[in-house]
Length: 93
Image (tube, rainbow, N blue to C red):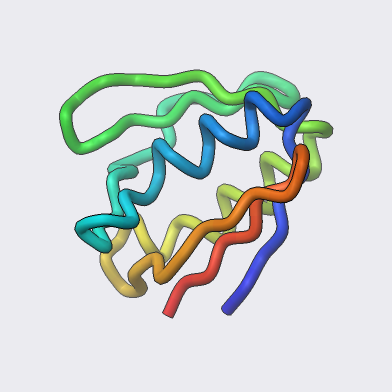
């Protein structure tokens, strides 16, 4: 399954893609969603750190949260992430 998430800018897109998936080890790094405030998403990583990511709109936050929940629940795994300007394409399987 593939999704495209629109971030606030290219910096936020790069941050999202690199925080949730480590390509070298093919490892999913996100462990949970801590908070959502309008278009801001606060995620928890496996190393217990928390990071804020600004998405373009509140709908993007909802779309990402719905998509990533099965990964957090370990039902699916992230396969890849790619960045195109302020957009992140995420594939899970």
